[in-house]
Image (cartoon, rainbow, N blue to C red; front, side):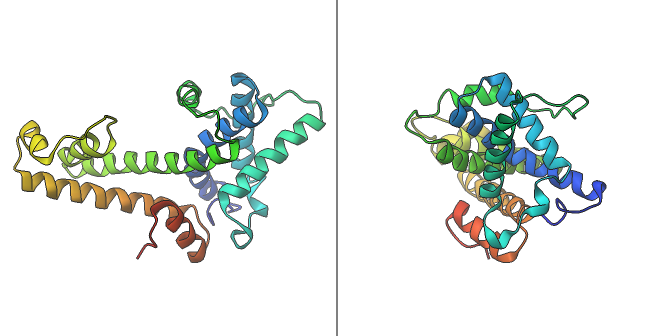
Length: 226
């Protein structure tokens, strides 16, 4: 967060990109649900929002002592939307605005599965956690690839990430991957430990103080990090 608030664009840009990776889907789906705008207008709004974030337009006023980053960003989205309505502007990016590479089609497919009873605010909170875990999985894959431990990731993906009515047993995984059951146990323990570390590291990178970090880690993981 301190890097994201930096006056140096070279320091700020990677930090903003990390925030965008976590928050673009929560913002996009929040806009679609709360204001019932079209997919095109929601995409344009999301591009505009994170372009302004890249330019440090919002983050200068963020104070972790006054609230959580995700609540702050949702409030900023509300204010930007209302400002555009007051100005009678269509939700379109300005000429020459930076084009962010975001997969809106995937977001729409996911949005189709959202329960109608869920409020935009509830969806925003859940999307934040989903995006955080998604980045954690990407980082875990990269770690396993670079260290020659892709079988650890594949076991984690097969047992912990795949949807299904029933999970395979450790014995079934051992047979499937040609491993001893003890290896399956140890490899999964490694992957889970590394995944948690990836998530914790991402939370720390997106918080400004130790207090904020511990509060957010507790909200996401259910336990205070050591």
